[in-house]
Image 1: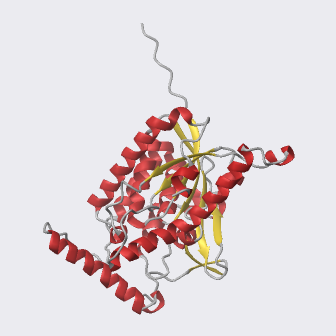
Image 2 (image 1 turned 30 degrees about the horizontal axis):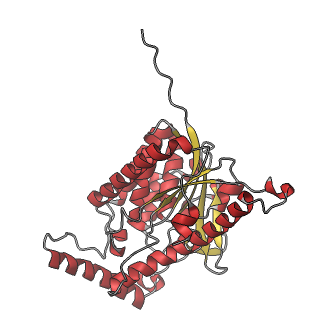
Image 3 (image 1 turned 30 degrees about the vertical axis):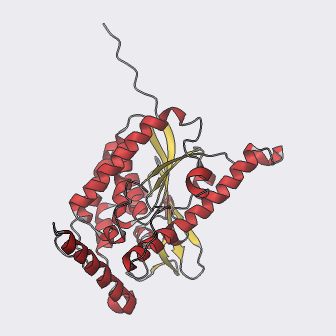
Length: 347
């Protein structure tokens, strides 16, 4: 009689989840596949904006029911997001290219005109945000803060100081999540403890440093949504706005990665005295990048909450994660599978 095979070893890693509006459904797919895998254990998450929603739902679901509980909670969140109505989106798409382009132009121009002419304090004086009610119904934050299985760090931007604010698990709340995803042209700043906050993507998309100082796991997987490189020069207004958005929301991450790359150089080339080496971790980096996978999705699709579109992004994320697991698993705990300088810095 054949002996049953032993279950595969599980390797621990930390996750860094970028923001990106509806494109965050890509991270939904990545996380869904990681949770489904019997070989990966998520230790800690640092996240911003849409990534913060994914990370929060994942941690809370894991607290309730381990991996399957996390997958179920992520499904619930995104399926309910699809029920929200985008006031700047026409209710249907057109099979004819001309009319489809006209529809995209209308959505883009309407949003741009309204948000340029009116601040959210004028346009939305009651500060109505349907996402706030949704998140409040999906996540019990008091229970979430009791989670000890996964550490969670959520980033927001302090409006007055211009600095990043990282909320650790014990401070993660509904307000913290809303602050992390607060686009200042659409929503009023979120007040927490007398301070005003905007979207975390401006100063930490996401902030990596909490994973260096607050965890012992040295494998970090960056789920990267916003394209860094685009070969084509943007020439139309929507293309220029799209590219500005990508550059803005990648800037803080690239600066932090450059600092990390410098520390790695110091460690590996022996530039540090022995007494200082023990104070620095030589983190092993991994990345799942959506650059090429989402290259054809313009800025306005970040506001597309159609369930078919979200499920398409989820499946793209699942496939990307499956490919990464197959290629990188053997090196987890041993070496990086991402060349920071080659992939993110020397472009």
